[in-house]
Length: 592
Ligand SMILES: CCCCCCCCCCCCC/C=C/[C@@H](O)[C@H](CO[C@@H]1O[C@H](CO)[C@@H](O)[C@H](O)[C@H]1O)NC(=O)CCCCCCCCCCCCCCCCC
Image 1 (cartoon, rainbow, N blue to C red):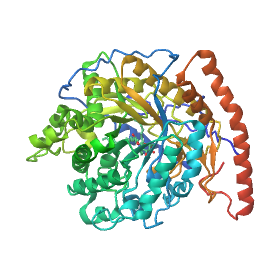
Image 2 (tube, rainbow, N blue to C red):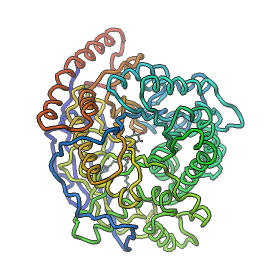
Image 3 (cartoon, protein in one colour):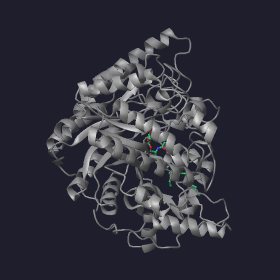
Image 4 (tube, rainbow, N blue to C red):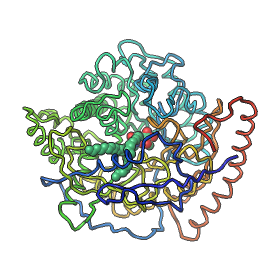
């Protein structure tokens, strides 16, 4: 049987709202996580986790141009269309989608190694086979073509083409051929490839030998890899991005250790990794600029993912400063050096002061030399922006010495509104108006750069096998509408990428969270894809290039739902069949 489990999961709120123990049962979002599908942490632990987010403010923030927090008030739905030529796409990443982890000469990545350690990933899932995108890319391009996507955003696996990580050692031609075939077939189908060079899968040997992004030698190795990609694919690829979401690479990989390579270097690891990543980005941009730009005529950017931070009280200066601090520690950490040449002043002030209080002789935040600053400044032809959710922010003091970390350095608390829908991932609440604010902030702070939205979407828990994903249609409708308002505000947004094309390996959550427009039946070795209703809905946004009028837009959901009922039946039949064929029909964790 397909369908949703409505578990009646009750959300607890703590933080400064003092709502621990309060109950909230969502009405609109039925495909919810069940208690049994969640990692085994107690309610008390959850309360503690959320209570963590409470901290205080000491210094002021200086910004190039102030963002006006009172502007862009939350308005009603805006019926209009995007400028002609606006690019619509969907995204994936190599480790999350390709599978084929040891096929055709691919080397091991840090994620291959990390997922082999017991207890790191929900249910010890791995991306070994994942969606089998390596073998099914032709089928996937047919899906993209059917949706009339203008672009496909994917990443190149570094160890697939350089198994040891080093260009000087061995180039894996079979890996190169895979990406050539993918790119050629996309272009044959008039789908523009937008390529990310690094979506988190560092070659494992570089981690073992040098400590990965803790080591500045990665800058040159990454540049060699990028240079090879420009050489082999650059005559066909015109949109490059160096890194996807360096915040997660740094914080989750080297600070909390929840992601590969799993290092827990609190208060230093993330800053050091980020420092080397920023340098690597700049070097690759210069390589393209010097060696390839005139021949290939492409662009090089970076994809930064950040949540919006809204002051709890927009009339309270301390809340405003805390919210700005949240954003500067998130987006500004990477964007400010790249656009303006150095770290945000507020990061230098806070981390410097706290390092001093710890008795350290220098700030835990590394310093760029004057030469490095001018080398890094301006190394962005366009900004890739990933955005999923929003937090309310208020100041909270974290005295130095009590476990200094990236999180405590910010002196703030993150809060959420219990009314915000959160159908899937714990951290992801649907707050569309935050997207418009984020886009306007980018315009104000960084000189209105060309922006491509590189990831935006919402998940459901794996217990949900309902392909009629009403909540995802609502999320896309509202977020894309806020992006449309931002375009009207004058933000230079040129394209949008729905995250993700397929359900895929969701990092430490394994396969338990599904972001896909297409459902993937991971329990079937053929990894069949089934369209969720949101495919039909997104198709209509694309074919109308926005939201032409109320009457039409209001019919879209109804029409989309008409088609998903038959997809549900197909999936149910296929699963019944596989149940008949297998002794253990369902993975233990995939009960419906
Ligand atoms: C002293 C204070 C200590 C506070 C410690 C709290 C730690 C909070 C950590 C906040 C985590 C937020 C993580 C969000 C990350 C996303 O921005 C990031 C986006 O990247 C893209 O995401 C896609 C979907 O995830 C992904 O498929 C794609 O590849 C990627 O490019 N996503 C990720 O990095 C994925 C992993 C996120 C895992 C986060 C687990 C955090 C669990 C904390 C849950 C509690 C949150 C409750 C919120 C209440 C706030 C008041």
